[in-house]
Amino acid sequence: MNGFGRQVEGWRAPRRQIRGNRLTDLALAIVASLAAAFLLAGCEHVQGYTPVSLVRVIDASYNAPALNVYVEGSLLATNIGQGTISPYGDFSPTSSTSISVTTTQSTNPLVTATGSLVANQTSSALITDINATYQVTLLEDQSTPAPSGHSDFRILNQAPSTGPIDVYFLAGTTAADYASAKPVITAIAVGATSGYVSIPSSTLFMVIAASGTTLTTTSKSIYVSAALPLVGGEVRTVLVVDPLISTAPVQVYTASDVN
Image (cartoon, rainbow, N blue to C red; front, side):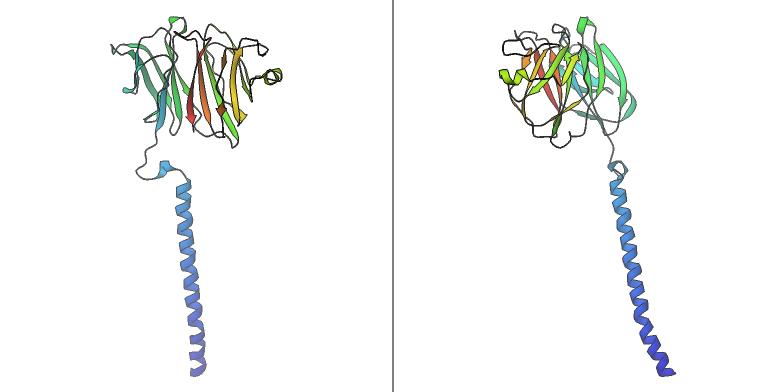
């Protein structure tokens, strides 16, 4: 009996050891899973991380002097004029932020506006003064890359002399290219902003024409870009304005929203 009992005890001890090892492995797996879950939940839950909202300025004004722009009382852009697209600045998210536009010589605002700044979102404060009425509008920008193999474009038509416009993206500017051309964005009214439109990425030319124009090599296009080497993922905002000095039909400014 004693021999048999010692044999049983000697056999059971390894089973208890194996079970203990399995429990330890299980506990480690649970801890690892919980740690991964916390990481995937988002950076806003990481201790010490403060979410921000990014804001930039797009100046499409014609009559305004050099401008300063304040967001939440902080100077975002200084001494800017038509065609300026500032870098993004970071601000605390809030449901009601103040945007103030002043001249560089005065703190008295030419125009003010309020808007929401969303955490981890990008926005543009668009300044316009068509018909000498100052306005500032907070636009929500796309903050994620375009789908693989595609590029996303948004058009801001701030060119009163041209009226509504059509926008094409073409592989070339020959008669054959124009003969089969179809606008990607159509009839964008003066003062309007198109949504983001996704196009297949390649080396393309952006052509802008008065809405309804049939493109030919002899027709008068408003604007033809240089070749755009699009590789995919790009997000762009295109500002179209009447030129202040140039004799070209329009002036075009392009901003990189992503990539």
